[in-house]
Image 1 (cartoon, rainbow, N blue to C red):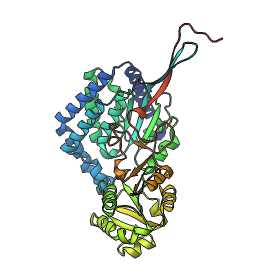
Image 2: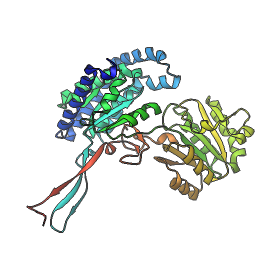
Image 3: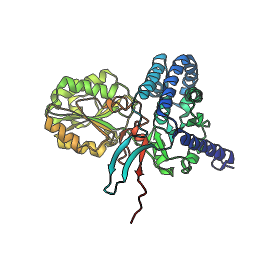
Image 4: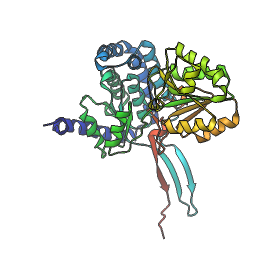
Length: 424
């Protein structure tokens, strides 16, 4: 019998999903103060059990080379006392955010006296599939519980020990705070068939959220029988306009590309206006080269910067997630917009300019979840936008777009107050 047909695996997946559904139902009656107390207590316990988390992380790091992880991927996997402190602080930041559950979005009194309100409610059960980053385990759990949802976490094998240790801590804290432990569950098997089973359990799971490589996200989108919040790639651009300040353009581009290489909001492609390319491009690319970035450019770029390698068309579609950037010289703003909308992934794109009209035209015309004007692409992040931690960045256009914070993990329902009203 194949793994896909394993009754034991199917029973495990269904039991996990059923427990999450029961926990989500229980959470609807839990006051926001208790959910916040869980966040505060979890942050404190993370600090107290730092050594335990680091010990689990060391097991993951030891196995990392066997999974073929690159330097940037190992950096994303690695925890330290400072990173654990950052995770704990992130939980506390979520705790002080306004509780979205029960928010009255709007309320009107009809001519017949009925009061019709739209009330924010949790989505229910979230199936979150992600890769390699143990800090995401805590972030996702925190943002789901704060918004009244139960969550089933399916992390990558690369961070299995770290994620398990974090979830055990969160579950123990939940029980001590009076929350159902099953509100936060982690899939205990690395069998890839388990993901397929969960994606068919639409009677228990309300939404699937994949976060990782394009292959993972496409699989979830193809197989899920429930709605999916997703983005396939983060091919982000910086466009340096003809009016850009050279120092600002260099600073923003280097930060967008080099601040962290392996994130979805990292710049992967640079466009420079032809009128300033000769003046700005050599120095800008020299700054990137000094950071160890390989330059792949068009004909004009290679003429101006002989160390640049010729780019292929597929390089302009690529999400490198490493020390490579594609570069192109464009004739004007309109070509920059056309290029970004053609090659980009709808994630994050930036313009560096001192021309307000150009900035407005760029913002209106770029079809991405976030458009940055004179700011790094790395700012497209839930924490940086004041949402607290995010569960992902969506490039979809329905329900949620951009960083998915607390409100993006809620829906709404209508609540109607009458006084014996009947319809004629």
